[in-house]
Image 1 (cartoon, helix red, strand yellow):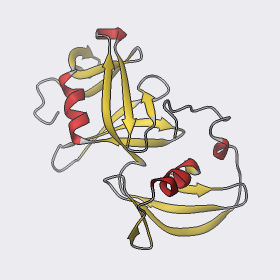
Image 2 (cartoon, helix red, strand yellow):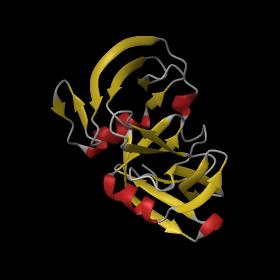
Image 3 (cartoon, rainbow, N blue to C red):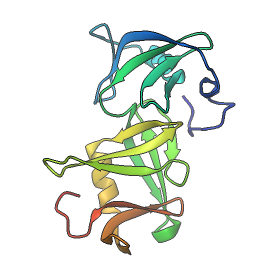
Length: 182
């Protein structure tokens, strides 16, 4: 993988390929970022990187391995990748946030690569993600999310006071100010 995730079609020709759906393949990307095939963990990083290079999530919400001639659906438990490191540069509205994934991609949060938080309806626990490319996302590891929360500032929004972070000129809400779940 590259040092800075590039979302251009030149880097990701898989986005242009239009093969017919051929079925499913028993590959699972677990919540911890590990890849499994037919119940066995794929331990070779090069093999995982190869599969990740032809990974695509389509508008139907399904994740596929795609080649110019076939498209096979796979299972993703949480994110397609895991953000394992956060590097912040600058402060306030000029702050830039760089996330490193478990496969070594570095992506900058901003208009092209948004941060989003899902909240568990029962527990209220946050589940944070950053877009990597296309519709593929990295879930933030717990330590990375804690680092992100340490950078949070309070801002008034139409929804009330929000804690959030600035990245790439965008404000990304993490949750209501005063929330114990963030």
